[in-house]
Amino acid sequence: METATESFAHVLLFACQRCGIPIASACVRTERNLEIADGHWFNPHCPCGWTGTVLGALALMHWLEPWKTPVDLEPDAPGALA
Image (cartoon, one colour):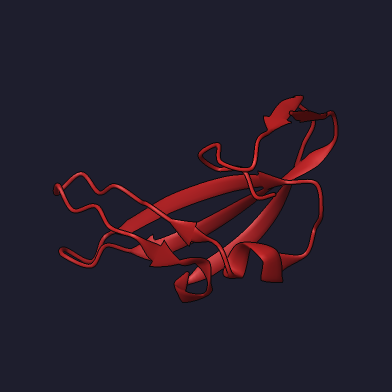
């Protein structure tokens, strides 16, 4: 398991496939490359009860935030992109 002390939070905004409200998902990556997260599958959960699997490339918005909090980058951990 690798611990990253400096990384980037990739925040992706999706529209709920049932009710249409905005729902966000995030992952952490040591690179700034947006294409990595675009190829990742996310499991957003909406307050209306919908949950599903969506490809990052289908996000309506995608942005980065510097993430200074150390995180464990496990390949299979939720939110981690290995």
